[in-house]
Image (tube, rainbow, N blue to C red; front, top):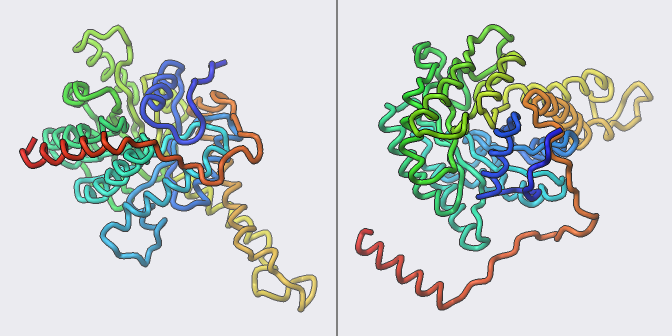
Length: 396
């Protein structure tokens, strides 16, 4: 049995993220990262984590963030604001579930960098008020760009993130398929496999800045849903990445790199287990939970068809009301229950199930408004403000 990691419950940041991911790597499990598009899906993930005794990662994609704020909103900052809205919801409710939560943003291609910039702005504002960033981590996916440009942009952003202790996930090599508007369905198959040299080049560039980063190295991964065996995964390649970097840096650790797995749908249990044993500490889950959420709704509609054809009138009589069936709280809950069950499957496959006994607070002990700004020294703040202004004026 794995000794639980000593980290707080609720959203964790900084050193606690490092501690949790190192604990996962040392103990041979990975933490599932679920894409969420609403407060309902966020709550389902949190409930699953509490039910299955697991830490969890909740992440927002660009499209998911747009959905969070409302599809009719066309403001240029809509996706950043939607991401912040989700983050604030999770921060508000997560402590009540009693498990550690990493709050993350998913794939950000070059064309989506304004979204990333908006989230970093929110992190900086939150950091100034509360002493930690709003998000635990962010992902840059510049895998469509040449490696040199990909890494250079990651370095630029990591330098901004490191002072706030925000984890950076980056991707090198391409994940096939299509997700959230990024289409790699026709990519050269060879590009679906990252080389050890590519992975080390990332490590070499980022490690002087800090240790809070992970690499999504492609090993044949494909976004979307496929039958097991229809995707040619080669997770054993990940061990080659670890061995190569270990040799280059003369590390005493067999797995010096934090790795991430994307495109897990269609992967066999053995392929997932091999990836985790090679140092994968996070696996994205989206397609399967999308289906499970719908499937819960589908089954409810099928089972209660005759009660969902009008506000009044069902097999019990022409004047019988149907409110208890069409109330969104009823059928959305069925969707949540189905998603909770599927989240549990991922936790079991990745080995995170049973690694953290929930520490739910005593009823009524959690503040209704659980945000406490740090105390500021006005003189110190003024001095720091002048220093930043002078440094900016001098171009430092």
